[in-house]
Image 1: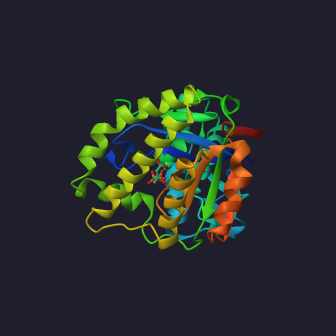
Image 2: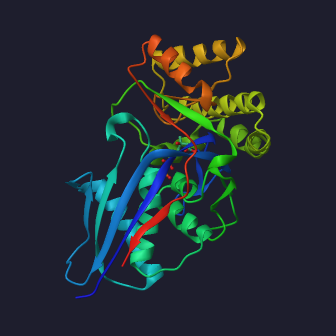
Length: 326
Ligand code: DP6
């Protein structure tokens, strides 16, 4: 019996310039470039074993056997890796997040980044970081950004081969903290994949996409120069533009809850009063508050005082990494 096994770990990431909408849904080629920070400590660990005696792929997530769409998405990604590695062997996949799945922290980025690195190694594929990022992108767009270290820019590219993420700065570049205000642990009604497919139904998407490269360039400069004030303005503008597109799609997607708006407004007041903090929000009600690390405990305390039930704090994280391969 041939058995090839590999284990990989990857972090979640938070986008400061958002990915929303695809120009090619099947290949997950994005409508616009995006930029993110890996989140240290919020990780998925995945072991993939290719074995000759498996009649079909076995997928377990968090200790429970996955079925239906969740399993289907993993199997589809394994099929892609099998195609690249020219193997027909079935695989056993065991995946664990070290953050609670109900915590409202998107796990598809860390999950597909870890799955890609582990499955590629177990299948004997020797890809560069760029190739692994492009491969991870096919499983979940934001997973492309969890492959490189620290602050990652996902370039549009011209096609499948050159649409991948690269690190623009290592995690040590800037101790920015993401203080996540967890307002709801409910499973979101409309996931990102369905959301991307609706983006073009919004009359605002074309305008959002048209300005994305310019916002990304301003955001990249602010990050590289550690210029928090400039970063704050462009990060909030980009997040709100994405939500404007979501709310004006057909059907419309409303992710904000009353407490989401209360936190957004408080964050802006705190910044106006001199505390360096800004918000960004993904496809859910939770608010990611970015702040230089020394202010993170103060921000977490203020969020709790506003009625936020739970917070998580993460610093910039490293690249997806292979832990074991045999
Ligand atoms: C709002 O990468 O989760 O978090 O490619 O369908 O898996 P799929 O979508 P996903 O979309 C992320 C959307 C976002 C913004 C972002 O992370 O850039």
